[in-house]
Length: 237
Image (tube, rainbow, N blue to C red; front, side):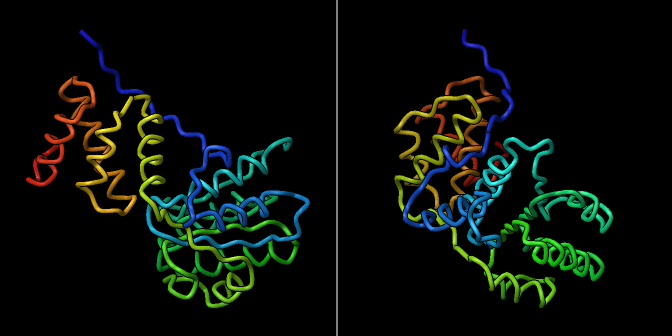
């Protein structure tokens, strides 16, 4: 009998394994420019829906810029709980400012001011800055108006997954990160029965993966159908 194990998720975000399509090719090129030390561009803001690759690009920038450096380039997501001191100490000696999920910045005036001050210090000194969020700069809540204005000065790119081939590749990469094989008919089934939003596709795979682990069965089309029925019925997967 085949044994099943809860393998850790292995996902190293690099430019080499970023899945490129028409909807994100510009964002990829801008990100490479920021990551390269010999390029004069030093400010980038990425926006787009959940699961579209913004975080992958930010972490790929960190990975590339950290090469041959004694300390890695820090990365901060506004999903984390952090204080003004946390923010300032994390980037005190950093050579680049990488901040993700700006749409989740709390409604906290002290944090808002501190983020603007850290941004301004990096921008004034010519150090690299890359930030990301769900929305364009003018639609971000709880952001200092000066920071919104400065973000519009730099490179701004929407990140999106605009074709089914790219969605298929993303599903396969997520499965590979989990160290499991997902047959082509299962990939096609998820695409046919789920909305085209990448976040929903990821949720469908995660539900299928949990179902596979719980039932100790390989991922297959019959199991995918069972998982889909459980999701639709609201049952615990």
